Structure formats: C-alpha cells, structure tokens
Length: 538
Ligand SMILES: Cc1cc2nc3c(=O)[nH]c(=O)nc-3n(C[C@H](O)[C@H](O)[C@H](O)COP(=O)(O)OP(=O)(O)OC[C@H]3O[C@@H](n4cnc5c(N)ncnc54)[C@H](O)[C@@H]3O)c2cc1C
Image (cartoon, rainbow, N blue to C red):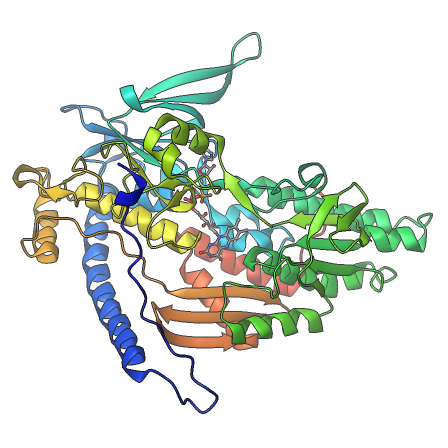
C-alpha cells in the first residue's frame, strides 16, 4: 500500500468570516454544518444507547460468574489478542472486549490505568495517586496481564518480545516471546525534549504517576530548601522560581494547581517565603491554550496572569542548565524547578514497528506515528495489527487526547466482538461473515446478535471510526476553569471562571472509570478543601 492510496481529507468549503454585524456570514454553510452536527448527535445518542446496553450485557455476564471460572482455560483454543499498553485506549478496549470469544493478553509496564486529566492535581496533592488509577485486572478479570515492556515485534511470525521485571541470577532481565493472532498496539507516546539541551537532565515531566510523585516531592523540597535561614534572599528567590515550559492544557493546569498550593498552604505554612515565590510560563506560540477557541483562550490568559503567573509568549527555551535556562531572546532565567510539558515523541517500540513494516517506513512523518486506515488497521499488516491512541495518525487528523483514544478503544473492541473480518485489504471495510455475526453460541450471544441486527440493519460492512467531539476543559487555578462543551461542530456550553470550574469538576467526576474512583476523587477534593493539601514529604 502506498502513500497515494490513503484517503485524503475531503475539501472543506470555504467559510466567509463575518464582520462585527454578521455581514458576510454564509448562513447556508453555517446551517448545513449545524444540521450535520445535530444529526451526528442524534446518531451518537442512539448508537451509544445500543452500545451501552450491549456492553452492560457483557459486563454483567462477566460479573455473574463464579470466581472458579477465572483462569478457566477449558474449551477450544480461542483467537489470541495481545494488547500493548494499559492507557486510555487499551483500558477502553479491555472493558468492551468479549473475553468469551477471545483470549486477551495485556502487556504493559504498569498494571493499572491512569486518569491523566487529574495528574496535575496529583502532583501538588489536591488528589491522591491511587484515587485516579484503576488496576487493569479490575477492568476485566478474564483478560490476562503480563507486567513488562514490549521490546520488539516480529510481524512475520506474529510474536512480541517483552522484557519482564524478573531477573536471572546474573542480574539480567528475563525476556519472553508472546505469540498473537491479532495485535492491538497502543503504547502511547513519551515526553520529548525536542532536542533542547539539558531538558532530560534538569526538568520534571508530567506523564506518569512517577512523574507526579517526583514533582510533588520536588516542590516540597524547594519550600524546605528556601526556608533554611543561611540561604541568601537572592538564592531563595531562585529556588522558589517555578518555570513551566509550554502553555498547552497540561502546562496551564499545572500552573493552576501550583497557584492554588502557593496561595493557600504555602502562604500559611511558610509566611516568610510567600512574597518570594514566582511562577513563569514559557510559551513558544503567540497564545496559551491553542486548542481552545480565541474567546476562551484570552479568558485563560487573563485568569492566569491576574493570578500572578508571568507568561512569556513567543519565547523558546534554547538550553536548560541545573540552575538557569537560556531563552531564545538571550535572557538567562534562574529557576529552582522546571516542568517540561512541551512535547511528546514516539516510544521505541513504535519506532521498531515502523522499521519492521516497509509501508509504514514510507508513510511516517517526523512525528513517527503509525499510519492507520479508517478501521484502525496498521497499513501493511493485513489486518493483523490494529493500533489506537496517541501513537497513531489517521485521516482526518485527530487530536492527541484521551477522548479520541478511549473512543477508539471501545470502537475496536465492539468491531471485533461483532465478528468483522479484519483481513480485507487496507482502506476496504472489514466485512461481517455469516458464521461470525456476533453470536458465539454462549448465553450472551443471542443478545449480542439481536443488537447487531438492530445496529447494522443488514449492512455487512463495518462503519469507519468516527470521532465524536464532546469539547474541551481546563482548570486555571483559584476555582476557575474553561469549559467548551460541544457536539462536534455544535457549541452546547461555553463557560469560564467559576462556572467553567464547576463544569470541569462535574465532567471529570462523572468520567472517572469506576465508582471507587469517583468516591475517592470526591473525598480527596473535600479533604484538600477542608484540611488543606498534605505537605509532608513522605
Ligand atoms: C498530564 C496530562 C493531562 C492530560 N489531560 C487530558 C485531558 O484533560 N483530556 C484529554 O482528552 N486528554 C488529556 N491528556 C492526553 C491523554 O492522556 C492521552 O491522549 C491518552 O493518554 C492517550 O491514550 P493512549 O492509550 O494512546 O496512551 P496512554 O494513555 O499514554 O497509555 C500508554 C500505555 O502504554 C504503556 N506502554 C508504554 N510503553 C510500552 C511498551 N514498550 N510496552 C508495553 N506497554 C507500554 C504505558 O505504560 C501505558 O500504560 C492528558 C495527558 C497528560 C499527560
């Protein structure tokens, strides 16, 4: 398959920009887009209802089994799906996949799912780490989990090599070969320095629980160091200068959380230091929060600058040293703690897969993402490798978000549950075969067959993946937030300030992946509000 064969994005009709009085507004085009969004919303609600009932039937058929059936491997050999990763897309996939039909094996270095939108809050102690994680085994007890990292892939004989945490007597790690019939690839991306010198050595990142843990400890460390009486005032100011590199949602949310910490617990517990702390945000672009629309972006900028965050727009970091960083305008900025949220890059295993599949090597760009077709199949693998989440790119280009990743995970699991043949040529829809239309002969099979009939109305080809955009949220600190709730192009709610904050909290409360997480997060929010964040450096 070659580059030219990928579907290109349909040409967009030009929309005229209206003047202040609305003259020049192309109402026909505007109405058409609104109608499309309303239809998409109706379709989404209908499909989601069917999907939810179908997923619930799967969930309860699992829940109602006796514990003895866990690990029961009797019966004919099932098709083996190996899933790489335990993030947003894999977690959604694991929740929805039918483990009666497939033998599912998860390989990941972490045995839990992480709710990343609250990681910034965890890095200053507003919520606790364990409140925003869920063990993968809980997500689906009938899937197997092997702790370790996938280090190589052999597509020609359908095998994964993984490195476990087990060690031999000479201290080297034990490697395993894990065969698969189908690979679901979703290792996400890693933090990247974009080649800026000194970033890995001197900056903190915010991607995993360990990053948040290190960051929380480092913030507390700076408070204690600056508190030593012998330290000069100039040095105290340096130690208490917190620099956040890049003003995307993660950087802004960290600033917001840090502002809350500095303006409450830090102010009360370190009264002599309170006037010395400084938060600086370095943003390479002309605005912060570029993913939000203009009106919300400027509210965001106003809120954080009014709170005292110094924002340097159109400024880049050239190099980071242990005590100061050099900016592209020649400024040498002394700092005590720097957080790098500026970029992401491919995992080694993704680069390895791109090397192994010749078509991928031709298609990949500088971002080194896997190119997938509209049914999430990795081009050039005959439908044996499916990929989802941040490590992929497809047409139309989708944002690198949890929303996209989890929708892809559910979509893929449901497509496999419904028995589509994924080995049709790239760019041609997988087809449902007569003998494999969602019924695997078990107790839940009849229910699934009925739902399948209702959904497809006799259509054999699988629908391509369609992202449904619910909008964006960001926390700005001081109980203020931004919320843009959408149904694709249809704006439902735009809110900022306190209203934005309450929407942000409500959505993330509801979006927690289990009742346990919901209760724990709610409790943490109440706890930090009533008793303050815990600053013990344990
Ligand atoms: C701090 C932060 C805040 C965010 N906030 C939001 C938000 O508010 N809204 C939003 O929509 N998105 C948000 N995102 C983005 C969102 O988290 C990602 O888009 C999403 O996690 C992508 O899901 P994924 O499944 O592709 O990868 P991930 O969720 O990153 O999961 C990747 C998984 O693969 C595992 N893995 C890595 N390497 C290997 C290997 N070699 N072998 C096996 N397993 C491996 C990892 O351990 C992990 O379990 C945020 C991200 C961060 C970091």
